[in-house]
Length: 264
Image (tube, rainbow, N blue to C red; front, side):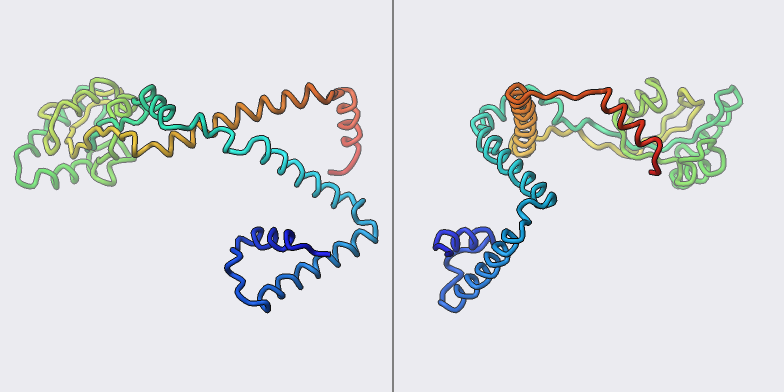
């Protein structure tokens, strides 16, 4: 027998509303489908498939999923996800939501020698103050730069923070880039950990702090994930104390030895 409650459960399982069924005909089609399912399930039971290893394994997976849904449902952690908790986390980690100032620059890299420095100075003298300075810089980068990565596109870099530039070129180079305004050439060769450089500061991206409203859901998901992880670990520890578990390394070694004598 199929009950009204079972029909309602089927409707919900399909993501439908009761209002979707306005006629007996439409509801009858759903019930006929449910009847066919029940008949097939009954036939499977009569043939002993409830004891089939695949069926047992599938049922165990469903039970585990249901158990975790019941005991570790997100609603369990809602009290810890209120605005006060979220805002407190934001204030403690405000620096994480600060987008630092970035600069984009172009550079012509020369050898770390006196000759390299002299070439850098000669390029600066030839390029600076010219109406077509940017074009001359690009041409010079393609001709003289020993930095094969950047020379193909006029020596230009991506936007980088002070620390990122420091990691690539050293602190003196980074400070030089950040101490000049965008659109300017640095008037003398700049030394780095790689050599001598002709440097043009191309653009600046201002520092920006993302406000709480912008990152609220991101923080909520982060805290929720942490709560779930902590609770799940505790949950497993409690279960392991309830049900004794023993794993024998000698048995595992025996299994490995057995596998070693067989084809993969």
